Picture (cartoon, rainbow, N blue to C red):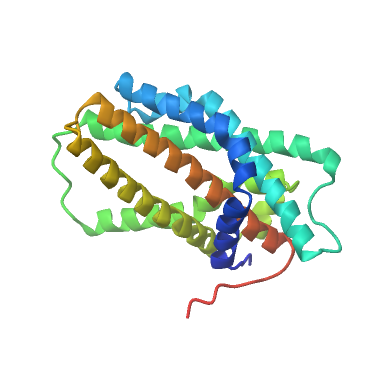
Length: 266
């Protein structure tokens, strides 16, 4: 069973982003600016809710974002090994780093496209029958919902396949180490500890922005207001992807290094 301290991994990710903020900004500035411009374009062309089309249009951004995240992940892990004075590194040799980053980038893009397709298909299905009454609750509906939740928890590990790839590990090796159903829980813990603070920060930032726009007399349905919200959304989306990737990377590294750490909840 693959276990790691997801609280420690997440704190290490936040610490790395803060301590190496100059490097993070230097690597991320271009992709972040372009992502913001694309999100603003979605507002201008009124396609904010078309996830599938957005995913296709964001394809070049996904490639750049995947490269940036993979580069920062391997940088963070090398710094982690140096700080711990690890005698034998489990990371690939330097000559394989560029190849692993490219492979991780491609896997990252495929995952992003898959998520765009799933979200877009689900939203399209809702739009197709907008006035349909909700189904009556039944035991069968409950069982199907529970089965879907169980499946999604198990499948959650597949969203992070690009992390072991940049570490020079094969997808097969990763799935063998994370083969137990419970192995998804530390990954879910990492994601929650990254997602919740980012969403709270986005809510606070959006409320502040809305207040400022209200003072200036700009309504929340105006193009100016929606453009500002698109900028906030693009920024939070990138930071969340980066921090969660770093946190998962620290956890996966711990597993492959056979540290067998666990999170002390109580």
